[in-house]
Length: 237
Image 1 (spheres, helix red, strand yellow):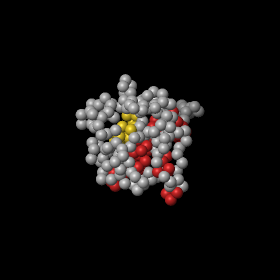
Image 2: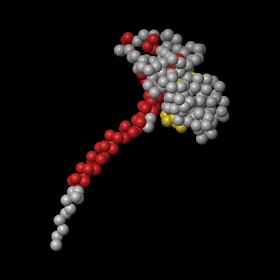
Image 3: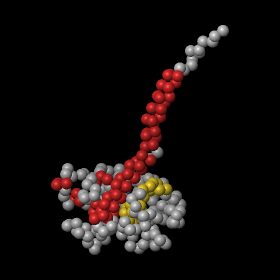
Image 4: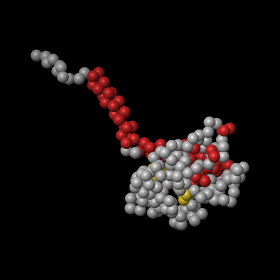
């Protein structure tokens, strides 16, 4: 006696449709979960930081291989005046290497950045002196001075800012150095490679295994940053 197929079974077509629907829902759910985990804003911030790093490299090609160090005068000539903040140094990239200041601003930074992004000029012809500088609240990124294309490619160049006067991060998202709640820190190296680093939860610094460094931003460690390399945080709001 022949058995009839069960009415509760799935045909191959129905099974394929069900799998496709599940796959679509899974695809839609991943970005949401990814954003909620905090990784999506970090990836976006990492992309912006890499753009700044590439702009530094372009700047270096015009300034004998040196990344932004001493300030430029109104005619774009290098002076003997060192920057006192990362805003001063990174302003040298505007507008020739980075035309839009929004690249430097980060909405997740509730300490160094203003709630709203900086306004961008309508065109290069309308640029004013004010448009050419990064004012307090317009820049999220810290910067290491006196580096060049000839420097150790693993040295840090650009990074998430820290507590003023230190190279330590903090836990509170509304405090200095707490953009990622003291768990992660974005670091762009001299060779413009970038990664989201883990913050050492005991020291609240970014450490490194090879070479062994307790704090990658600390000067004076063997074969690492020297006293001429200053770690500069952004200007306060």
